[in-house]
Amino acid sequence: MKVLDSKFAQGFIRMCNDGWEQGWHERNGGNLSYRIKEEEIAEVMDDLKMDGAWKEIGTSVPTLANEYFLVTGSGKYFRNVILEPEDSICIIQVDAKGEKYKICWGLKNGGRPTSELPSHLMNLEVKKKVTDGRYRVVYHAHTTNVIALTFVLPLKDEIFTRELWEMATECPVVFPDGIGVVPWMVPGGRDIAVKTSKLMEKYDVAIWAHHGIFGSGEDFDLTFGLVHTVEKAAEILVKTMSMSPKKLQTIEPDEFRHLAKDFGVTLPEKFLYNK
View 1 (cartoon, helix red, strand yellow):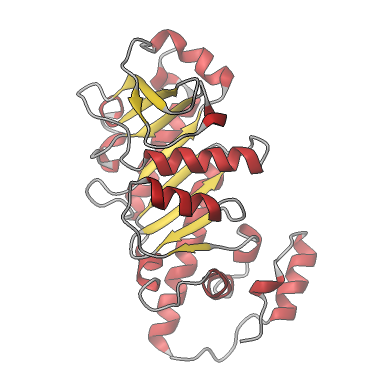
View 2: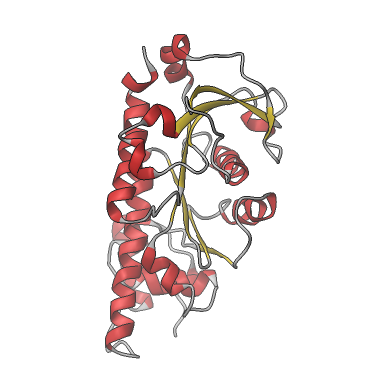
């Protein structure tokens, strides 16, 4: 099977285009990665080239050794993924030590995987460990309203989580573990990857101050839906704050507890403080 005929590649391309249509990927902003299943890579193996040069990842991800990943390219535009996928995305393989990668498909006109590859792989490794292998997608988008909130809210997990939970009843059901916040850091390097991966041990969403959102999930639908929900809650909060400096009514702590019981989720008490 050709890579572009595979279900996983088609889902990846659709998610890139969905993000573009939301307005989250100006120019070459944002990136997406997917840890490919063994049976999926077996289906497209004849379409791969295995003689590529090994290159340094910039970090070590030993539990991802020998695995394959579909990722967006550095400097590539999300708006072009659906038009020219073989130029915009690539499949890479990680080496036996988890320290190097090689390109096996894609980027036919040259280039390299996303500049934030260390962050993606370190967080895919973390989510693989803490979910027993269920999580396979990591997505970074420049979500407008989330970024705006990082200029006016304290950069604390508890505050961002509670404020966004209050914006829509579905929010604590969609991200019951809460949201982590990373203070501004230079993107693309190992330092921000380490900081984010610590948060992703307990959250599925991390907000990068003045930069965007970083989310992870089991598949494309769940991951996109998670990021979409957080950004929509942020949009409601931005509108609420612009209308009044104080909310006249909101969802109270005990109401969150009732919601959690009815929907079968656990909400950490640290987010249910009385403000």
